[in-house]
Length: 102
Image 1 (cartoon, helix red, strand yellow):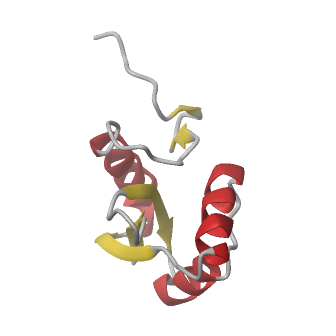
Image 2 (image 1 turned 180 degrees about the horizontal axis):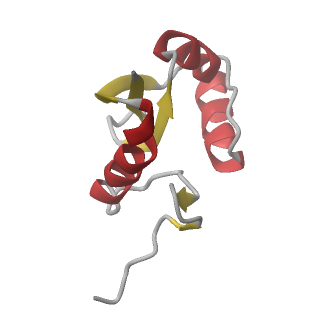
């Protein structure tokens, strides 16, 4: 199973990032150490670490591997009004704030 998760800011409770992982415990540990592939997420994690804080990681769904990309995409789109640090909508490489015209 693949976990779809969200990272919340411990200061505000706001959702800041949506991701997926096959090992939530290890991924949470990496986030607490400030490790992230994304520049925006990495900067936010560094800011938290400098303040002695860590993101709050919550699993929001568990899905089969073949459903992971679609589930992550749905979670990002469901939070499109949040100040997410995700840079693209998973699966199509469009900027996450992209709003279809239909």
